[in-house]
Length: 421
Image (cartoon, rainbow, N blue to C red):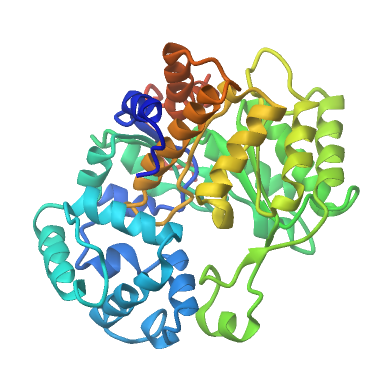
């Protein structure tokens, strides 16, 4: 699957068993702490997955079978029946990778196989599959969650003081507080310090675009970036989502239900202004920019290169293909831009941005696409046909670069934590 040449197969062999550092997710820390088991495959797969919900709507499935009050089995059967209409879609690809890798099921999921797959998957979920077994199977070394600044992080502290082998670190996500009429920077700074004491390594900002320079939100974002620089945190900017565009159904289902799309705002000039202000103060932190609208992909990636600086290799990252671009052509385009406009060997690779513990197949998906990308470039003469160099590049992008990028703060060696009142 997705391996386009013998060389691609060889490169893939060098990366497929590497551990996973999933530095941006929406996974619940409580489910990791309590080693959540899942009653059925609907709960594991469909309960929170708006990628699947969106696809089901496109296939004509009624909302009562998606977010409504139909029984879990009915919803799963509706998803299964819709899948044959979506061949080639990444949701189709991921679903079958998950069936294969998690459950050992190789049948295509459709209306005819759904009953048997429902029974077989549920039997395994009730007997041998839980969050801890999934994290162990996929060799997940670190998970970055996404957290409200005013979360007490009790689950994270309990995880850190437990015997759970996967490191779980919180991420400071203050978006809604930057949209308030009055922004309480003193309180947000106190919470930033608290998150730091609790092992946080990053802030994350899911915004339509960088706020207008001089506005309260812009000034607040500048201050948070300065705090990040002081603590050696990473600044993540998720730019471009236009949210809840179907107002009727959004009112019915709530946020994060599959009604968000690619916004069409101008991004590059505002980003440059923001980065330049921080650079002029010598307080620009490591920064990862994720872009949702491909219209400005090249200009955004190019803009970041103007602010690269020692000693960090790839201090500013044009982040992994995100959300509506997390598919074969989207990942290929992101890799190609990074190759042409930056240094591909410094790229920090893939993340799931997911709410599902079976989404770790997406790292395998990415590693397959990456292996074929590098192999095709070597075969065409755009890169050296040097297996050692290509394998090391693939390994660095898949694992080692992000491990270095998260340094210098050690993750496993911090003292036990207690809640800060």
